[in-house]
Amino acid sequence: MNPRALLLIGPLSLLTVSAPSGHAWGCKGHQTVALIAEKRLTPETQEMVQKILADSPVDPKLKRWCGNATMDLMVDASTWPDDVRNERNNGPWHYIDIPLGKHQGSLNEYCGSEGCVTRAIEQQRAILKDKSADPLKRAEAIRYLIHFVGDMHQPLHAANNADNGGNCVPVAYFHHNPLPNPVHPDRDEYSPNLHQVWDTEIVERDMEISNPRRYADELDEKFRKKSADWEAADIQVERWAWESHERAEAEVYGAFPEKIGIEPDLKLKSCAENNRMGKRMFEKHLAIGEAYQNRAGEIVEISLAQAGARLAMILNDAAKTNP
Ligand SMILES: [Zn+2]
Image (tube, rainbow, N blue to C red; front, side, top):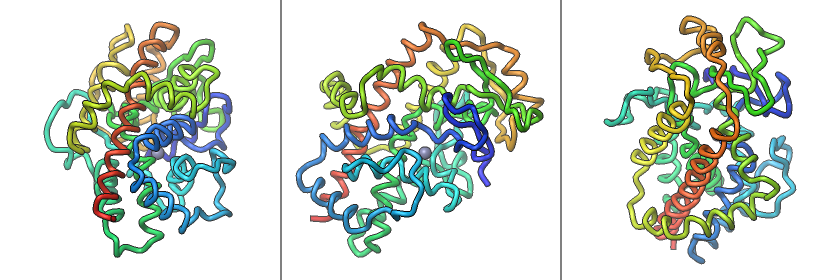
């Protein structure tokens, strides 16, 4: 089982241990990425994607965490991988643990035997491009790609500081103080924590009263010029992961006035490991307020816009091989 799945800490509004674990961008972040990408698909790609998804629908009995009220197949697809993550036991496909303090090199050594997000993207791209592959597998490949390109642009899905990608870093978020897991106080898990607020809270506060469709329109407009440069560059999944990693170091950890040191390169099964990592971080009393939120909001916006533009590049590229 992957260590992050052990952290049964749900969204801030549900301080309960029965909610699913933090899975990268919450519902609205993933939906926004899908909607930005959708604006950038060629008509041929749009046709290919709609047909493949419509021909192999999601199991209607599957419990959908983000609801199933949408008519938009790409929006619906964007959150599906989190809904099947436990039954398929592929949690590690959602992230890559690049240790804080590393700045270059091959990502192979950080991609374990169970896989990682960069490898999963390459594998799913290959399935989608293979016209003779099982149609259901190609539909799942589209669903995985929509989700994983989003995930890898959440900076804490490309970074680890012996803290399960920030899951073991308690933070106060405005008036919410971090509280220990009430069922297992010995695990040194707290909510809110850094991973969780970057997945969901920072995005939703930045969105204000908007919704994913309107937010996607706003981001598409705001980054129109920059996205031409992103599209002019090649599809370079490893480079994108490094870029996300650098954001984690500078903007997620580095934006706190308190220094968070570089920890040994460890993957934890619980936040009580690494000399009680969760408790040690709790004692720093990290707090996110207006200043951190404003800076993080800018980072979230560019990350979602890039994820959308790059997802469209991947899908448009796949459609070229599937006329
Ligand atoms: Zn995910």
